[in-house]
Image 1: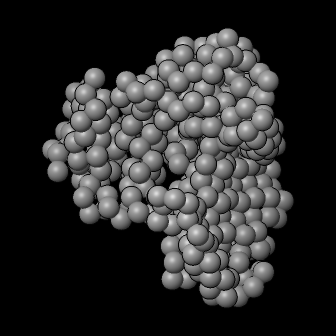
Image 2: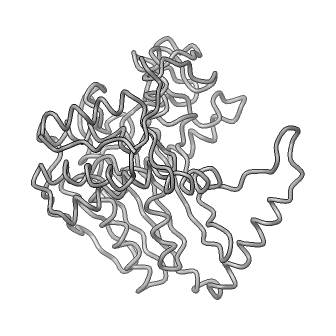
Amino acid sequence: MSNALTTYSSSDLREFSTQVFLHFGISRQDAEQAADVLSLADLRGIDSHGMARLHTYFDMLTLGRINPKPNILIIRDKKSLCTVDGDNGLGLIVGPKANEIAMDKAEAHGSGWVSVCNTNHFGIASYYSLKALERDMIGWSMTNTTKLVAPIWGAERMLGTNPISIAFPGLNNPPIVIDFATSAAAYGKIEIALRKGAPVPKGWTINHQGDMTTDPNDMINGGALLPLGSERELGGHKGYALAAMVDILTSVLSGANWGPFAPPFALRQEIPSRSVGKGIGHFFGAMQIDGFMEVDEFKKRIDEWIEVFRNTKPTKGQKAVLIPGDPEHAEEAIRRKSGIPLIQAVVDDLKDISKQTGIPFPDQQ
C-alpha cells in the first residue's frame, strides 16, 4: 500500500465535502457547517478526523443510518442547563448547534452546560472548545464513542475513546487548547497505521486475549485499545476514570447509550447487544471569563503562564517544552499556506465518493 502524500487545497476539499453533504438533501447552511468541522481537523493536522472520515459519513447517510434533516430539540431546560435530542442528525451538525446553545446560556447566566443524546460522531472535540474563545469564554467539549477501550484489568472493549477538549484564550500568544482521547490513542490513529502497514507503539493496544500488541490488525480483529496511561502501573487507571467521567456526562446524563451499548460509527464495528438510550452523547460547556475576572487580565495571565512554561529547561535533544495545542497551531500555519496532504488510501476513498455521486473531485495542488 502506498504511503505517498498528495496535497490538495483546503478550500477545494471543503467544497467537495459540502457538495457530498448537499447530495443527501442536507441544507446548504448545515452542509457548510459539517464541512467546516472536517476542514479544521485536517488544517490542524488531526488527519484521522478530517477527509479520512468522509467516506464513513457518506456510507451512513447512504444506508439511511443518519437523518439528513434532523429536528434538533431542547427536551429539558433549566436556566444554564439543558438536554438536547439530536434526532439522529449528523454529529457535525448537531454538535455545533448544541455548542451554540451552551454559549448562549453562558451569555445569559455566566455558564452554560448542554448534554446531548441521539447523535453520532461530531469530529474533533477542539472545534467546539475553540468556538467559545471567539466569544471570550472558556470552552469545554466531550463525546462518548462506540466501545473500543478495555477497562483496567479488562480484556474486552467496554468504553469509547471518549475525548475531552478545553480551550483557554491568550492575548498575544495562541490559545491553550487541550484536546485528547481518554484512550492511549485515538482509534483513527490505529486506522491510519493499518492503512500505512505500520506498527503502533507498545502500550496502545491489546489483542483478543488481553496481551499487549503493536500490530493494528490485532486490535481491530477482536482486541482493544488501552486507557490513557496504558497499564495500571503506568497510570492507566487515571485514563480509565476520565473515560468513565465522559461516558456519564455525555450519555448517562443525556439519555444516550453509554459504555458497551454505544452504537458504532464505522460499519465494520460490532453492533451492541442491546440499546440503553438514543444514539451516542456529547457534552458541551461554556464559561464567561468576566464572571471571574476582566477578560484581558485573564488573557495576560494566560500569556504569562505560557511564557513561564516555555522557559522550562528542556530535556536533552529538545528545544523547548510543549504547550497544549502547540503542534496543532504549528501545523495549521503550515497547511493554510501549503495545503492538506492526503495519503493514497484516503484519496481513493474520496474518488470513490466522486464516482458514486458524480461530484467532481478536485485536482491536486
